[in-house]
Image (tube, rainbow, N blue to C red; front, side, top):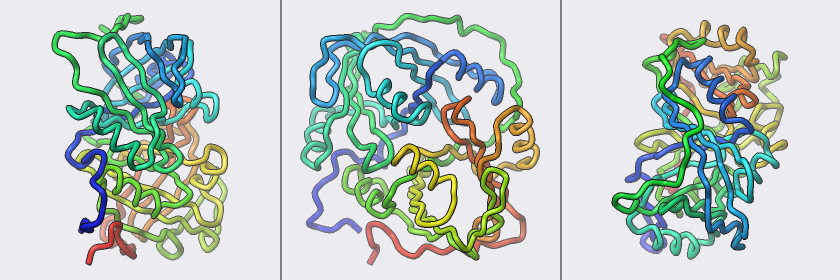
Length: 348
């Protein structure tokens, strides 16, 4: 599968766990409270971080950055909500450009941290931001334009060290049920909108050996029964390319809106490349979940039927939760009409 003339990757992502998904929000307290309200009480770890030695787009900043964070597990996925408070940061820039949204994926720590940075630079990827929190450090790579999401990496923590943090809320609260009960469903996919899905998949492979990727064309008759913001859409006008890879912990879906009205096309036009949704996959009580969320103030953005066998609904939860959430419904007894048209890299 790997060609002999390929350069080695900067990091072998298939061998790394997903540490967390980072979502930038304007108010951590309000957003984490909304997650509690919808999904049930989340045991959030809340803190304020002072980031020192800030380097932003290659320039060392004289000012520290302060971030407020809440980290917790939702649907089996570790989510980090980040609120930029003061000072220069990629989070403040992201919030200013895009509003609330999924900003990064973290592959955690690497023993060869400095070497990974060097290999990324050798493969044409700049450092977006670096900083120090206590005796810990982090690097964000400038991958938003190519991959649709920034990538974070940390060095191995030094023994006996803790970040410079300050708790700002007591987390010892009794658990409570939410608006919907999705157990035992797990978040199984991150959907990322890009202008060229095949090119983005190739870069994921080159940088991280993330793949292989399967290429699908989401077009009629394999894409049907579409609605967007409550209005029917003529599916004959819609063409979306989906390129999909399975990391051991989560599926990556790259979505390229090619023609016709869609949530993905609107997202790309408004935000540029970026993480569009998190998907809980096939939910047994799909209709009840969608109805409960809609009645709870989260509108339906887009619905449809994929491959003649799987219904899907995007819930427009960006203002409340920082991202769109997708739920799928399996129509029993039906087999998908979708087949892959190719792979990246090509399999001979």
